Image 1 (cartoon, helix red, strand yellow):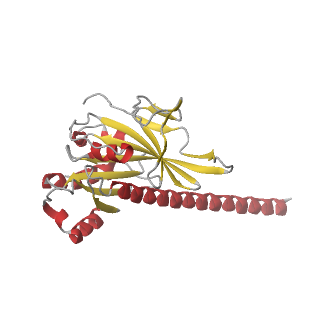
Image 2: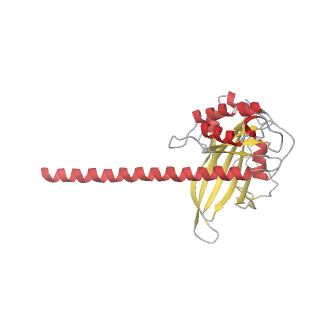
Image 3: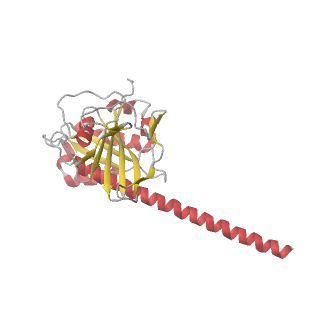
Length: 275
C-alpha cells in the first residue's frame, strides 16, 4: 500500500453554505490555501485522527456557549466512483475533470455552524477504492460515526460492490452502543446515463432498507447535485444517534446511582439491627 496521504483543509460554513472563515492552528488563512498536518485540537495516533475532546463547549461571540461536536465520517466505494470529487465539491465547492487515484487515505475537515447553539466539525476520510482488499480498513474505520458508500451510476459493477463495502464496514466498526454506523448510499454521476437498479427509485428504496442504509441520494459532484443535502441528512442522523446514546448512558448512570443508594440504605438498616 502507498503512503498515507493527509490534507487538513478547513472551512467554517454556516447552514446557508456561506464561508464564514478558513483557519489553521496559527490563525485565519486564505480560502485558496492548502495545509499539511493537523489542527491544534487534534492528535494523530496509530492511523487515527482523534479530537482532544469530541464534545466541547466554546464561547459565543455575544456571550454564552455553543456545544461543539467532532464527527468522523468515512467515504468509501470502488475505484473511480467519484469519492474524492464529492469531498472536494462539499468542502471546497470545486470540481476537476482530472482524475488521480487516492492512495491509502486522504483527510479533509469541514466545520458547520449547525444552529445557534451547535458547531459540527466533520472529519471526512476519503479511503482508496482498493483498500477493501487490504488489511488497513479496520484502522481507517475506527471511531467513525457515519459513512457514505459511493457508486457510479454509469457502471453497474460498482453498484454490485456496494454490499461488500457495507458488510466490510459493519464487520469492523460499530457505534458505542454496538449499533451499526449510519450509512448513506450515494448514486454518483447522476448527470450521466444510468445503468441498473438506480433507474427504479422504488427498488432502490427496498434495496437500502434490506441492506441497512439509512437513505440514498442521486448525486453529481460535477453539477453539484444533492451533495449538501446528503451530508445534511447524514449529520442529522449522527446527531440524533449521539443524543439517544447519551440519553441511554445517563439513564444507566442514574439507575446505577439509585441502586447504590438503595444498597447503602439496606446496609445501614441491617447494621442498626445488629447493634
